[in-house]
Image (cartoon, rainbow over all chains, first blue to last red; front, side, top):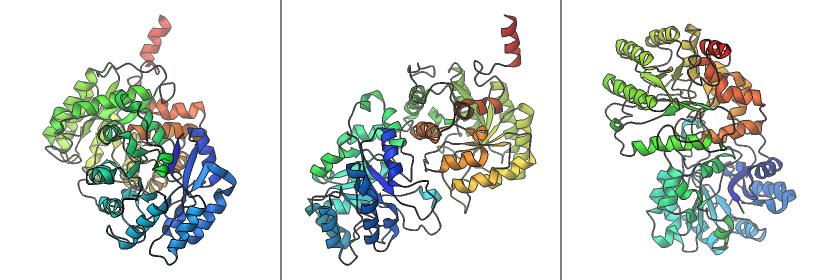
Length: 255
Length: 297
């Protein structure tokens, strides 16, 4: 079963997105041969309080059953976040999203460490986003910057129960984090393939050879990015790695 | 792998000719030890996708001895020589742009002449001088004389200077295109960085500016907006340095609902029209002479 771990619904504040609705996402999944998606609420990344976004996400996904699984946003410096996390877990969330750069949190933020521990204790993966858009096209007001390797390493080291999925990372960040962690720590970090280059530079093939397919997950970045890209990337892999299977998102949840 | 590698029976990019108007190859003087593997990887992936022709350039030494976007005359000459050497051994799978730096005006004209003699099908301008600078006028004039389109590196919406290049955007290129209405310009990689939403209205009314859809950027909405701005007859397919995004865009165009004619425009027909007639895909678009011979046969 293929699960796209990196999708959203809802508009993006810095440019128009065509049809970022759950019904369209269901059609896209069918077209791409993807059985399920983990879905975040895109505007919540830019809300001060993500609570209303989590409610909107739950309402929007309700008609789509198990096909679209909610990934609520938990902001760990907001009062009551522990309750929001409990509610997310009770509601069957696939994972929890957090956006430290958008919230002005640096790479060693104490509240993010506390969230990582709590999410690990709740048995959920923590899903992080390196970037929403190419850095060369940012809106002048989009000054949050990208999630750093230091931030990912810090969280991976902060709690042995943490399971972290990092989306929209490129080769350089993946390598600096992976090889900057102990084997035990890096075994709790996964990467989606939505922003990893294929041929001719062959970053994806290189990473699969060097790090192993068990650390990588299928992800697209829809509705910000074309849903066709991860499939195309996998189909263009060289022969020696084409048959490798990426990790299962369900397996990450069960880990 | 040689440049004449076999194609798979069912190309991932679908049936029919497919011209990549924005490709790069490397050579030993580029300073990267894996240059052969990268070239082989492009050809391997191209065979899987079903690329019929890679129209490619080598930007000097790609920063090894002089900057990628400000290449020295000697680096340009070597890169162009290596590009044509690769082309010559490719049995038509690879065609070449001749790269020039407008700041060395006389050398640029010499390189274009050498390129034409060597069979180049287009001119590549990187980011050595702003697109609307008068130094580009003689290059555009030479392009008209020799019937070569100009592929111009573009940053989508220039809001400030960036190190390492003298960037141009759609509005800059549009001013050059307005001065040279008989020249054909390819505005490079709408997915190659910057705000593509600025580019489309900047060149929508410039009939001699074509948009290549290459680049690592795969923003949803980009292709729809490009089609709305210039239509399928002014879009060109390409990959630049990420071929998986090129394949994804082909599939996205189909998902948008383009018909076979519109897909053919973007896949190869527009390219065949603006490059030297009959040279890019001689089996698909025969020259008048070849057509006459065929009719006599």
